[in-house]
Length: 197
Image (cartoon, rainbow, N blue to C red; front, side, top):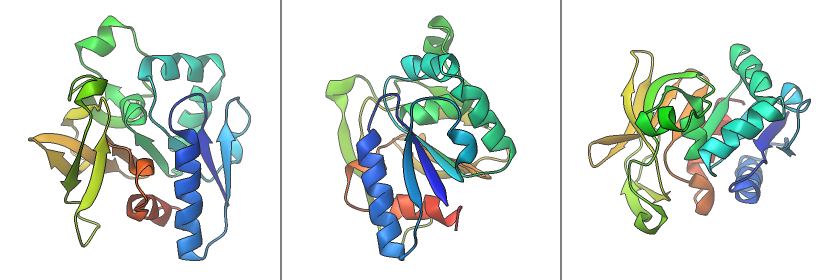
């Protein structure tokens, strides 16, 4: 088994460490690899799109030839998790900011996103979220976070904050507005790994 983490920018090392901790806790073995260029995604069984600057990430995914590989991975039904900017990239539709900046979206998940739903970097916060797959609240870290404005009938809403959708899934896809890699609690990564093992 091989799990890829897109390593163009963002919380790459934190996701790698969180995945390794989650695997250790499960007693399961998988290679966790970082991806900066094309040719690696196709060799992975699961993929993480981390946070970062979504416009830049979208451009670099196209320039490096990785965007098409992610499309193929999704078509094969392999698990893909997008956190923060990764959530934005998974979406089929964006808000007016996305349109104004001509931001590239992967268009994998039937949802529309608000790129900066919770304000700027200085408006970052932590809050406890109720997630249906966890038995107790999860301390979620939001940094210049997006939110899901609308979603199709095949999308399952997993969490809301201030009446905004901040976590959802659709088949093999998991979209999170927060940063599970910035906490020692591996339960969200464990949930993602459940799609693989």
